[in-house]
Image 1 (spheres, one colour):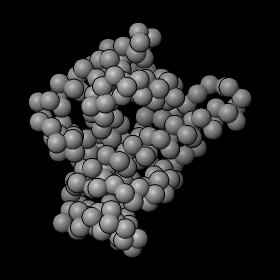
Image 2 (cartoon, rainbow, N blue to C red):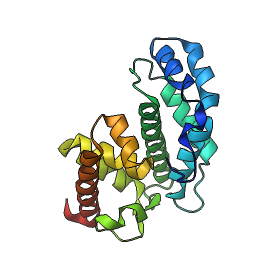
Image 3 (tube, helix red, strand yellow):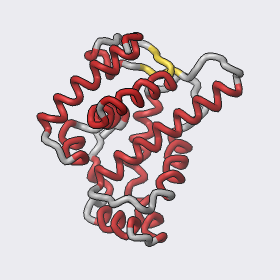
Length: 198
């Protein structure tokens, strides 16, 4: 996932799907049992997100994991298909936490400069390394989702969650070849939009 050297299967994968099913069925204790098993992976995911944020960001990875956890607890009606699905929703929750944090920060500064993220992961799509406002990036990704939900999800999972092509293919139940194609097209569209072309 986010850390190429990390083993995403250190979270006792055989227990995770069972706990996800119990949690989805309404067992409130399942989440308490699940979190210790997935905490390290969620923290690596949070660190991956935070590396893209501006220097001096006031939100720490631990706080990001906590905020995402609070949001995930409310999603009791989700039919969890696998660990990858859980991590994908966790990544989405983390992105939304950062967007909300950026909005609050901007409001506190009364319209001042927004939070910045580095787009080095999108360089091949036509945007060189540099900084882009996190809210602008969020809005561009939302626009992409309106045009092509699959491409937006692939970009979110590949770029923001740091998932491999194979992991995204598993989460989305698509072939790796399809994921590669959607990643290439979605990344190019997003890079174009961020240059002001959309």
